[in-house]
Length: 149
Image (cartoon, rainbow, N blue to C red; front, side):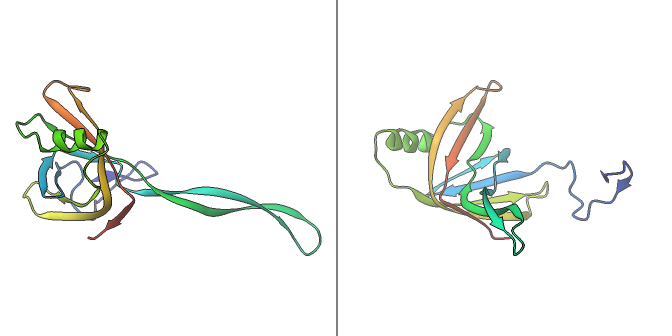
């Protein structure tokens, strides 16, 4: 159940409110699992244009401008693998190309519930213990995002 705008409870059509979701992230031959991911989406700039009507009336209209992809921020427990750390270090030194990636969200039974495809991904940052001990948080930039399911 989830709350409606008027405060009443309504049934969650997906039956997944409040249940844990896990994420599988694969990029350039590296695969890992995250417990939290956010920033899945894109946005457009809002461009305001003046418009003069047939009787000389003046108005401002808003139209979509450039589209950009939000940075993807994912967290997980600290692990032994150095693959993302090494990739991040290569990017910082002007190395390793950007790669395509996928992110699959799984429900508590590990059944896939959503999937996104990213074009030209690279690690912007990796933080250890920033918000809580034993966690690492990774931020990725991408040129494009597409929800596959």
